[in-house]
Figure (cartoon, rainbow, N blue to C red):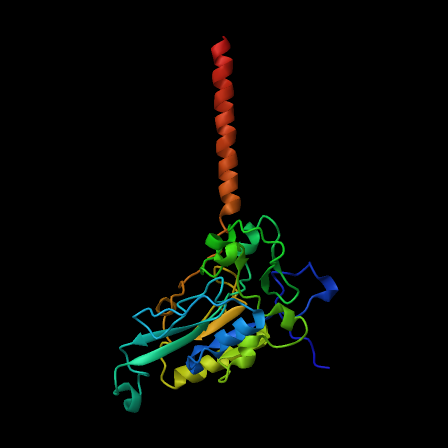
Length: 285
C-alpha cells in the first residue's frame, strides 16, 4: 500500500477526523488542449446535463460560449494575432497567429464564498475537498451566484427548475475511486485528476518544460494556497495572462470582508441607539 500523500486539509480539517482523505482536484494543462470538446460531451452525458442549444457567436468557433447551469465544462477558443512561441526562430518568425484552447470548470476553491452564503446548507464540501451543490436541498435563492468570483454558478431556468447547478467534480464517480468523466475522456491528458499536492508538483515540472520550450508567457493559475481564495481545487497551466481566457487575475473570496462589515454595522447601530436614547431622555427634561 502506498503512503498517504502529505496534503493540506485547511478547508476541511476537523469535519472528517480520521476519515479525512487526500484532497482531490483537477490540473488542466491548456498547452496540450486541442479543443475537441470531448470533456464537454462526457460531462453532459455522465451527469445528464440538459442541452442548452449551440450558438453561433460570430466571433469564435466556440459554440457553447461559457460555463453555466447547463455547461459544467467549457472549452474556450481564443484566437490571437501572435506567434505560437517566442525566442524560437522557426516558430517565432512564422505566421503571427495562434489558437489558445482552455477547458474551464468550477475551481472548487479552498475558501468558497458560495458555500459560505448558502442559507440552506445545499452547498457542501465533500470528504475529497470538492464543493458540491445538493440538488435536493437547493431552494433556488441564488445567493451563491453573485458570491462566486468566477461566475461559475448559474440558475437553471429551463422547465422552471430555478435551482443552481455546477460541476460536482463527478462526486458520484470520485467517491467510488473513479476518474471524473471529463478527465477520463480527454485524449491529450490536458485534464488530469488526482491528489492535489501531486498535481501541483506535476504542474510545476510541466511549467518549467513549457517555458524552456519558448512559451515565455506560460504560468500556473490557481495553484497558490496563499492567493485570494486559498488556492483552487481545479487549477490551470495557461499560456497567457488569465484575462485572455476570461479569468480574473487576482480572485478574492467575496465573503472575506463580511465579518468586519458586520462589526462596523453593529457599532453604527449601537451608536444610533445611544443617540436616540439620549434624545428621548433629553426631551423629557
